[in-house]
Image (tube, rainbow, N blue to C red):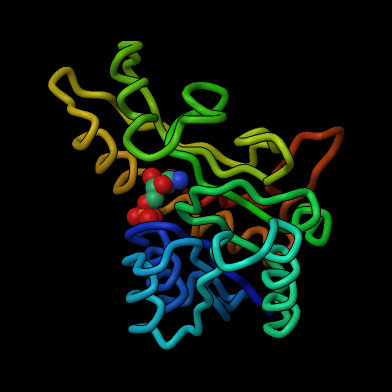
Length: 213
Ligand code: GRF
């Protein structure tokens, strides 16, 4: 059983999806052992507390520099014997120092079909605003490995979602969460913990004949 840390910044609906999936026995090869937030008062912290999962607020402002912040984060991971890191609405970039400790062990969920509407500045509602501005008819969510480039690591899985003519950024955000994110993230988390994800020549493949998403 691999030990999972979930990193958050906001409301934590993706964290909740992971907690619920775990409760239903859908992540048999992993266990969520801690939550890290870079924002004090993030709603996700309440969800962690309710589920009895220890959390840690790790803010840049509390440390003299990024290096010291990273040391604190890595020490927290060591104490909790973390094997896998899941970014679930984490709105900051992890440094190379942190990423290097977890090669192909950190995943992120992004609310578009990468490489559309991703990279620096594309987070939260802005992603959906950009999708509507472009007039795309299909969008979706992507789970990918994390490297030093924002939303740039190997794509692991994607799920499409239809755009409606009368969508607002808010209505589209909610549909992408309901129809894609909340299923995709727990599914890929389980596949990672089960050792079913292979990276060949920089591309990721899920070795799961059910492809259950
Ligand atoms: C989600 O859309 C996620 O894809 C993005 O930020 C949002 C976080 O929502 N990275 P929540 O905090 O999980 O509710």
